Length: 262
Image (cartoon, rainbow, N blue to C red; front, side):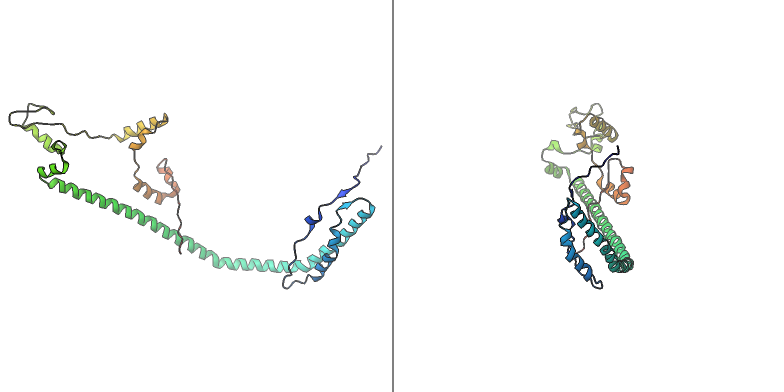
C-alpha cells in the first residue's frame, strides 16, 4: 500500500499585522502612484487571508499570489534603475567625501596627539623642576645649619643630647682619648665620647629578596619599605608606551586622557 500523506484540515498564515508594510513616503523622481494604488486596493483583502480551510480559501490565496508576482516585477521596473543610479552617485559622493575627510581627520588625530604629548612632557618637566627646587632648598638649609656655631645649633634642636655630631668630629676625639672606646667617659680633662643615634644601612637587594619571599607566603608588610622611582618610570612609559612591561615587570602603561578643545 502506498504511503499516504495526511494534510491538516486548516493551514494558518502569519498574522496580518506582521505582513503590513511600513508607510510609504514618495521620493522625488520616482512615480510609484500605480504601485501604491494596487496595494491600497488589494492588500486589505490579502490581510484577511490568514487561514486555508477549504478549496475556496485555497483558490483565494492562489489568486492573491498570482496577482502579487507581477506587482513585484512592476516595483523593480520603477525602482531598480533609479536605485542603481543613486547607488552609483552614493559611491561617487562617498569617495569625494573621503578625499576631503581623510586628511582632515588625520590632521585632527596627529595634532591632538602632538598637543597631548606636549602637555604630558610639560607635566614631567614641571615635576623635575619641582624636585630640583626642593633639592636646592634642602641643600641651602643644610649649608645654613653647617655654618651655624654649636650654641646656635643647640638652640635649634633643643636638648643638648640631641645635637647631631658629624662623624669627622667623632673620629677626631680619638686623639684625645687613645685608651678608651666609644661610650666610655674619659680623663680629667672632661673630654669624653658618646654613641651617635642609630641610622639605617640599606641593602636594597636583600630587602627586595626578603619582600618577594614574604609575598609568596602572603605577607605584604615589607612593601611599605619599597618605593618606585615614578619620575623615571613615567618618563620611560611615555617613550615606550605599552612596551614598558618588557623593561620593568609589574609596570603597565595606560592612557587615560584626551584633548578636548573648546
